[in-house]
Image (spheres, helix red, strand yellow):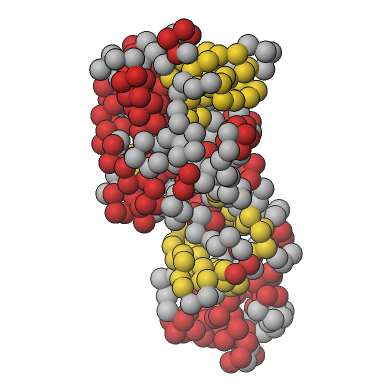
Length: 421
């Protein structure tokens, strides 16, 4: 079939995983066609890292897998086949140098996501891969010993090897509308429940809305699930119309259990001080402002906008005189400064998430090749798979690594079958 059509490997989806699969398959000598529904390749790459494209992380393999809460063992072969060094070397060979920043995050030296996409496009051209833009796939079906890939509009392409790399459900404006999950199901694969990850949190209380737009810097957010501490980091967060967001919260969301209400999340506004030191600070502030109202003293401890809300949450009248506050009231204020509860109700919608949690069940995919265990010749790569990681470049590396392995594996099958190796 592929001899007749001239396609050895047909790749559906032109994001990070799809471009890498196409590039690696073409470099291996396969005749590759890449189908992308958008008007350009790598559309989601343009918005990653706030437009700077955090392409990977220099963490070693053990640390990388620790940063991958779901199905990390599935990635062993993919990361071994194509790690962060292989990626940065490839980009450099294609004219895009990279740099390492805080937390091992890797960005293009230019700070332009477009340079990463252009480098991969250059590689695809040089390798001879055929790229078709504006080519949305309507269905993928078994056809003899291969696959019939039918486009919207009726055109059908045939190939014995297909790589599905259509992304997840996050950022649908970039073309990630979940088409690949339907293709996978139609071909007999199970898809685990889908939800957002790396996303804002809705809070089961009205008070965060009163602080909408207020950003807190150098605060600590902790999360506990049962007896296990699942998150404890210092950074920046933001109050919104729905609850909380910002870097700390986005990162926290990737650590939360499936039932987010099982997590106890607290905000520490004085992470550099112990509870005892906070209490001494309060005693000093209140002694110096004994004749002032609490509302006048709180701006020395937090943003002025937060004072009235904070006092109410602690059950202390904001018009109380500082010199007359009881020990119990001071203790309540101290507890609030060190562990203000953030009762999480739910994650924000998946459309707002950085990545999708859930996807094609990896138990049905061979980790050493990314080939379906159920349907020979079918491969999966990228966010479509039920693997996701924390922030810091890990998710893009997963896309590049699984894409590279899928592309190489599909090409090897094609070349062996046609006697070209």
